[in-house]
Image 1 (cartoon, rainbow, N blue to C red):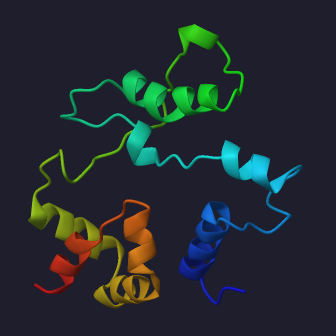
Image 2: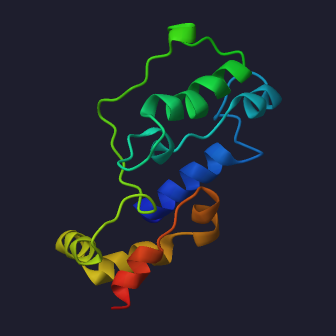
Image 3: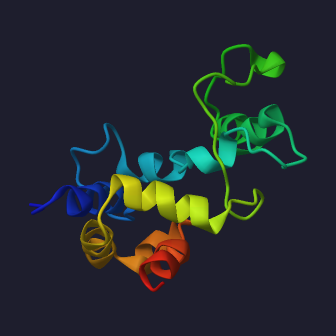
Length: 143
């Protein structure tokens, strides 16, 4: 069992992404489950300012196409409708964020001790495998 929320999050993702998931994770065949699942990050399908590809193109690539490949019916079939409400992501690689504003925002919500604690609880190799990079937080803490 997890001793804090960060560890619970990591355990949850490890279970979902495991090659040997607990049998309570799926119904039916484990092989069928492993062949049918796919991981979608919000960052992959959300509207990203400065990104030339449309939200619909990203959602087709990361949601519709993998579902079709797994023979999962998709509402609307070929007239796939993207979800554009409730999603917006500001990707640090495509959007220029003022470092001072970022620092002010983070430190306005969290103490440096809180940020250090969260970073200390994360499995950075696992986070990187999922596509997350916390280098900007380390930069803020090292200033």
